[in-house]
Length: 409
Length: 103
Length: 108
Image (cartoon, rainbow over all chains, first blue to last red; front, side):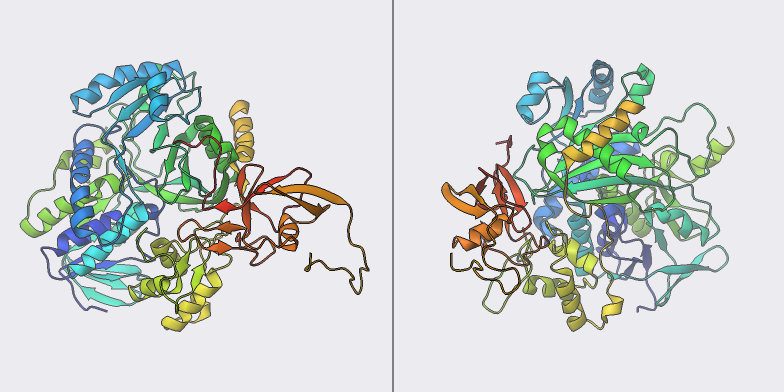
């Protein structure tokens, strides 16, 4: 094992591998440590959505748009494996008048953000997706939304990083981080020690465990998602379709929240402790159905805070199946062959945690709930920061500092 | 799909019958650093098919044992996950609908 | 009919429990009541049960016990049916499955 490195990246998911690749084009000695395998956690278990339509202003949309910009060049010039990148647009379907009304209200703000989004009626929706149920009343359609195979994408970035000279150690677990007067001096693993002055914490939903090694309390937590995959069929539908699962009896304000990943926390008490479940699994569901190149259909999901418990449940999988079958009735006759659970990194405001900390050399890149669609931009900013000292973008939104102001409320 | 799926020459044999992944493809993946059943699965699709690795995982473990310094005890299978055998979404959805209606 | 067991040393002679008519790629076949689809097909001399998606390789029985899915065919319009563990039924329409087969309501 290498004795020293310019930068040690902890975590072999999308954030770690994207950073390893982009950094190793400028830095000679990059080492990535992954305790299991590349893309074995959230980066290998998600729906591979590279979506713009759900984005919020600021960090969220900027990182997503930049990453989408970078993908085609990587696909054509850099990657040596096919990552199944398809840009067929993304669709959010509505089953109730409430959803459609909220969509109308949200449409203008989306267009102001320069998101090329269209509000389609029932017929226009069915024209794009004939297999959709007659219960669909309309949809949001964003033609620039894309999808890819998340496992292969993460692996492709890891391979590209290795070609640029990065060293990747899998089945290598970090046990502790050595400090010399509040400055990083090395990393201790189950396979030996590496001297370094820069550590990037890209450990996703385990970001807080790594933070503890340097005495930092990082409020990122695992949000468990269940998914299932079907046997291969010829394509039943053409693109990733999302459903908001907003209950019919929700208020307009509650329904508005169902349209984005980030959470508005401008009011009320903020707790930085581990989040607790509210309501049942059925109350915490959102439909994602994805047709893949191989012919399998991936379906999700239900959300749960259960620490790092990896079990799936009959309840969860049944709910996912009923959402999918409601949207695409033909799926009723298709068989589920496997299910899994993975951990989306969760932060209280839905915004990742990036940048430097009070520990010199310890850089955060955790809490990315949509790493596939933002990871390239994150790797880019981290590289500029580490190599040129360029400040990370949107630090007000993404730095650890923001939690101090929340705690003061 | 890239990865040299399918048997390309007379010396090669099919390991994952469901996804048509050949021995050469798997050994390439092992040479490129895939040293677990899980990583070989992600890289080559071997084990992702209709039988979910029941037929090929023993063979892939054998290839790993032959090509790396791992013993059979070191080689962990993929996580055992439901369903035990394929089940239609329609059947699962019936239960899901019942749960949704009850709330 | 050469593969049928006519005289089993323990179970005796006539194992037939009655006839069932099925159709395989349009060809009528007589099967024994209760036997797996694949048994009836193989007994009738049908070796290729399907062709694979990527290489078009011909597949037949492999494990013959419901695990490997080599023997899957399209039965009554539904693909991926394991013929080695699915019993024949009167009037069943079975098709040699080409790749993923044809599903109802595909998007074109």
